[in-house]
Length: 518
Image 1 (cartoon, helix red, strand yellow):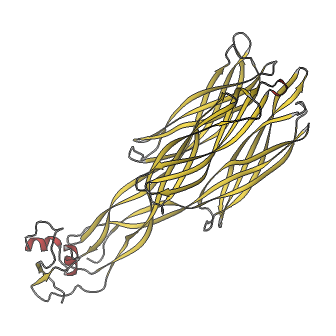
Image 2: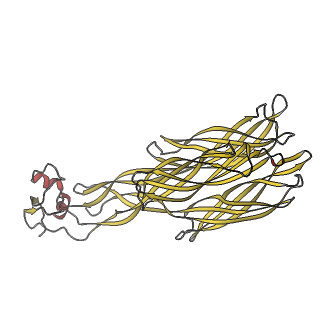
């Protein structure tokens, strides 16, 4: 046997290299358009930051983004105060330090508002300043070939062991379209001006089946508007079910899926009903979903091989493997009673955002800590200042069970608002949010893999005796003994009447046929 044909398996995976944060200061002064009245008081500034571009560089990630400000304010009218809004957009960019990051490595980035202030410079100019926190993660791609099997010749002996390799099938991007129609009840005023329209996704799920993925979610649509010809503010909402099947080659139900969802665009169109009143709103939004498919491939890897007739050198190399330990989802309720400066009369709209401030792995679980930011627009009993906004930050802690998780593993965490409520209780505002936390725990393990088989120029030792009596030593296996004496396990078992080739005892005496090594 002069050569052997090797059948190789390519192993490719991504491993979280590191993640880090960067604080980005945003600041600007913005003029009120001539079409709008003077500002008397800023009620609230709705801030929506988003990532528009990202690139991995040496030891850092460069991130570009856009921030949209929706300024809702009070203005004087003939018979009192009215509510108006104006939107502005600006850009931001920053570097996130990631030591050991290299150009073109895969990276991920997300951002959220850590702090934002607004001030009235004059009746025609508002100032906005704050901090947008950027979180970026860099993933290193590993790719190497190992010997999966050897094209057998009659006397080639191979020792295999079962291995499980975590592999990534790939990423799939798709868009989900939200379409809903909201009708304003007759006990509410007609729509005069839409001040705010939001979409919050919850109950997101990706279910895998043979050849396809079913993506489902609920979209909570909230619209704040001012009544036509009056100062009344009304918030309407609808919960829309989304479902889409996406064909993915090679996927099956045994695999794991991780979904990342982003609201890309929101449009609305106000229409008249049969009575000619503006009471119908058609809302359409685009949701981008990125689904990553990961699976465990069971492979019988070659641990060792030899031939009784030819000396073979096994070339092995040690590689790190990324292993998915487990995933889980948990929900935590965050609630409190907030005392505003003035007595609340009616809740008009509530909004919340969540951010993760810390995560740590303990035995069999991941402990996640974070903050929920509540913003509540409410009406008061004070005629001179009927509308107010109160903001509050409430901490939360969530413990997510992941069987087998240990302190030295890595955790990827995402938190979202599943539901938010606000109500008046006595002189306080009771707020409640359900925070959904998704965790994924990975760890790195080192394994030796056979990467090549070389034919040696050495000759197999010549036979010194017709048989050899060998006394089994501690740590011996039939494989080791057969390889040492250039014979086969089957041959030793046949001559020695061994029924179970995996069971031999120390000090057993075995007859070794064929060539013997002195």
